[in-house]
Length: 84
Image 1: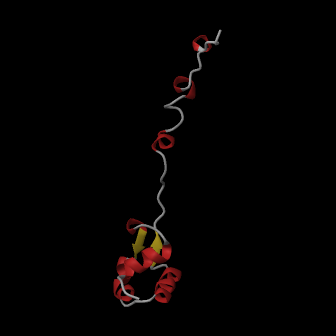
Image 2: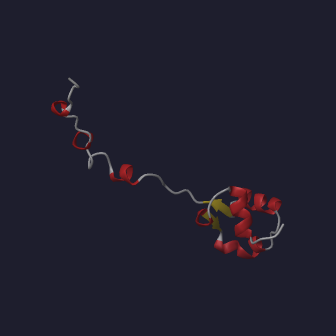
Image 3: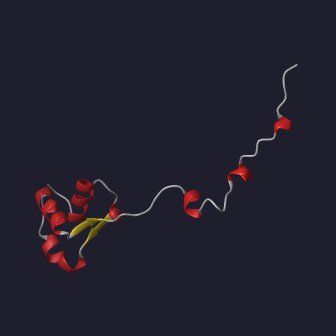
């Protein structure tokens, strides 16, 4: 199997390129690995890890106190008209 260690780890972990962490102190050991089995062993040893980041919508990260629901979703009963 061809590719760099990072590419193999990306494919194995199923994450993007920015979410793979390689231990900078063990790069000589990491660079020798060329197979998926080797990647699995390095993950088990903790030399390759998946970075966990908080993602999602922007609004929840701002907090519910900044955007009260009543302000955005006001229902005015006077604007509802009936067909006569």
